[in-house]
Amino acid sequence: MKNNEKLLYAIGEADEKNIPEISDKKKKNKIIGWSVGIGSCAAAAAIAVAAVSISGNMGNVPWQEHDPTVSNSSISEPAVSDSQEPVSSDTAVTEPTATESSDTEPSVDAEPTEPLPAVYPSSFDYEKKTDDLPVLTSGFSVGAMGYEGHRFESEEGLSEMVSAHNNPWTQDMELETLPVFKNKVYEGWTSQGGIFIYLSEEKMKNMIETAAQLLDKEIASMETETDMFIQRGDSEDGYPSQEAFENAETKAFKVNAECSDGTKISIYGDGSLRIELDPAVQLPDGYSLDAAETKQETMEYLYAQYAKLLQYSDPAFYSDTMYDYVYDKGGDLTQNILNYNLSNARFCVNDKGELWIIYIDNHFCSSEYMGDYPVISCYEAKELLKEGKYGTSVPAELTGEINDETIAAGELVYRNNSGLDEYFMPYYRFYVQVEDENDGYSYGAFYVPAVSPEYLTDVSVYDGSFN
Image 1 (cartoon, rainbow, N blue to C red):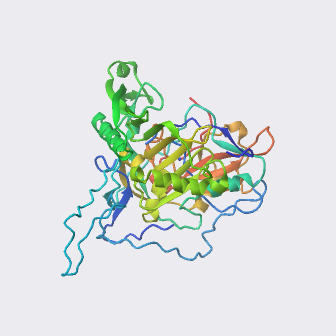
Image 2: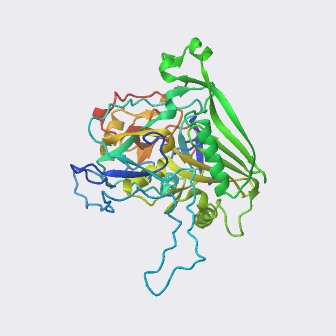
Image 3: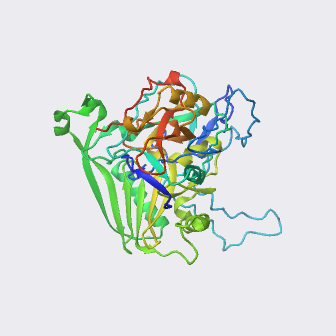
């Protein structure tokens, strides 16, 4: 993080174009991920945000949104055939084929290349659903730490940060629908915050074994951590009763493995994976994640080293104030937006600049597709924001008037907090200038659901208080 870019407070959350035209015939969509049931990650995941062009003076000039009354040139999208088969998890592995010439026989020494296993098989299909969509709860949950905001020494700081997000969504994209997923992790309570239970112990062990194989590591030992589990439906006033605690089941929530070389691999019940390299890996000379001029090349190098583990068909990179990410940008526009927010990996270095930890999140493995919901435009969301229909963790005493002058930027995100959000659904995230006694320029994050209001319960103001 640059000296002139400071994260005000870490939010207390666990750890973040066009849609194909809908014809009368249902289309199949592919989402990079792995399915449990219909298609069902992350102990320390940051909220991913999308980029939007910001012009002018961040502190004093209104954010320049797209006015839907002004005609826009259409944005083309790669055609997807109805008959297209799912992307295979072994797309990077090609099977040898015999020559078509009748004069040449295939070599007797040639053996078919075995497809790579995958921690998360790379895709699952779902029948696109746009009818009979259930109404969603628009509740906004945050953790118990500080508020989500950023402070910069200059007016350009916010613009630089947002541009580094490098998201596939941009403001001029006219969206009609976006998928929503039921977060299966949300269905139960545990005794500790940030502990997520959904996947079975057997599935978690299989995932760890696959990860070790892809890393060319040998597992020396493995252990399972358990915790109580209470169905949310057994709660009273949103919190389990004493009787529910006393009668709670015990379930696995995490499996840990230690490899013979000291590497540690952990998988959580929401499917998120943590790999701690021991010893940490020294990067070659000239590679560093600390300097802007070397970050892209370094991320490309790191992906190349772990491509067998991640198996992305078209890796793309971005950064936020805390982490450097890679995701698969090899799908259609909708899939790329989903992958950016819900299925990605991040590389973390230690204070010596060595690669230390790799996190992999895949929220599709702990969620269930609910349907493609109509969405509002960023312009419409901004109007709702000014009307006070938003969610935020910014304390009320720091929130002044929200108007065109104080709204500095807007972006499309999927909130991806495994233990806090009932749904993985799209939001517009706005940066609004807030009051701050410190020098510089301070902005808080305010969320407006992107799903059309008729599919939501009432969206009211969250006052920034914490439980």
